[in-house]
Amino acid sequence: ATQANELAKSENPAILDTLARILFMQDKKDKAIETQEKAIKLAEDEDTKDELASTLKSYKAGKLPDVDEDGAVITEDAK
Image 1 (cartoon, rainbow, N blue to C red):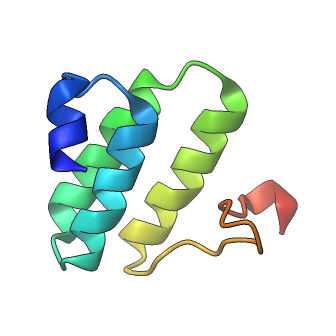
Image 2 (image 1 turned 45 degrees about the vertical axis):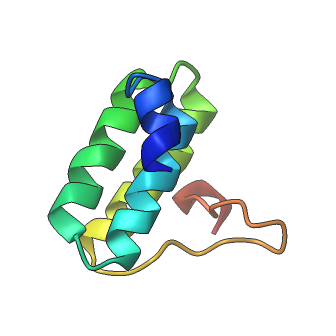
């Protein structure tokens, strides 16, 4: 994910989202939150922003986000 992010010049929200998840799982919560916030800023559509924001909220609460059977993040609206 780090190499993909470097190739994308830190401008791809999907790659940043993946990198943030890895950082969170490596117990680098602050860096994960920072990375997820950048992903939100770069996202272009509202659905993506909502999903990324839901993930950010989970990271701030110290947990991984809830996902459905396809691995998509379950946003607050869908709960």
